Image (tube, rainbow, N blue to C red):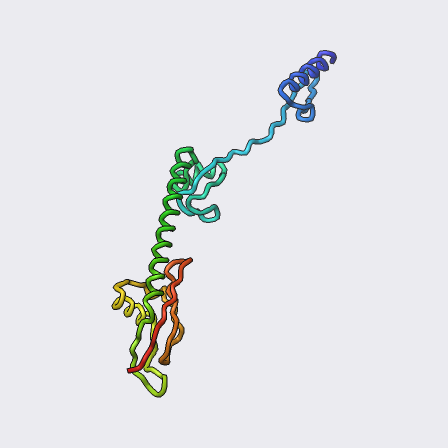
Length: 194
């Protein structure tokens, strides 16, 4: 029994040399043998990835994530939905983001120039068949305004970006053209009866 105590004491000193504490060990005595069992925390195995496309319940394209190694190895990698992050990949992503940002800025500037053109033109004149008083037959629609813009300015405008008040009488109205999420042009429409 004296040998078992000496062995246990030497084992504990050996454990201390690796930075362990007596709380992390368990001694199991079996007649004249002493076993030392080390308690080891299970390492979390994750991978840093970038998504190549939107993945439901995980994230959007281009998002950087930590996922479990098995999920990456068994699902994301074979389906081509993700890629492990590397330094060259991060550089490519940064360049792509800068390119996209520059493109967005260019589109916004074009929309602002177009809005300036629309606002400096003055009022677009719309002729309709008249009824009693200020009434007109029918109404002025977004498609009517798009046709007038195309005829006067030679610019193609999508009718889905045109927001008109309900026009059923002669007079002057203001329509909005949403050229960009941040740029809206206000154009005047002068409706008259013939």
